[in-house]
Image 1: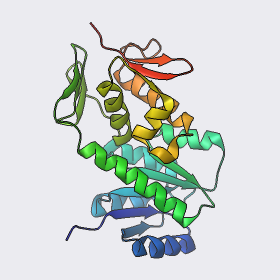
Image 2: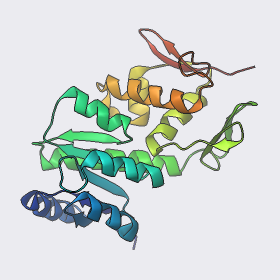
Image 3: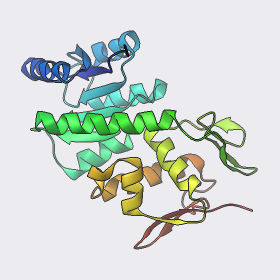
Length: 232
């Protein structure tokens, strides 16, 4: 029998915690919970979850700081939960390394669908192709070892960043429309989330480009999408 997928819920609203635990456990998940950011970080190491549901507005440590600290040590998928629905908050969460963002109030079925989608992307990452997708004197993208290195040093990428880079590298020289990228990396239900692509392209450029302001590898094809360019 396969072990249950483990979720870690970091949320200070006791009523919401109980509701989410009941629903998600009924859906087949093993759910651990923490009521503040510090406890959440402790349970990250104790529970080793497959995905984290992270509230933003919490005592002791808020969700922004918790997300930052998690990303220093782990690429575990993170879905941020918040009462704030403004675009700026959504952008900030994604920039800090969250994989998805759900604004309260949300339906439990919507949240479950988001969890399923993020987990699916994460598992696709673990079953990547068994060859080096791209290599030059500056950059190596190794899908067999699921590693990316620049100038011989590992590049720290989240699971979503890797999936995006691998998709681009698998199609070197081809222009990928934004809709194709969204479907391939996030899933069909995300085809209208254009900002996701913009943010993650920006983040990848900061990590792999010699000069992010003048991208050599990931080129923007205005009005269409993006193209990974082989360097000579």
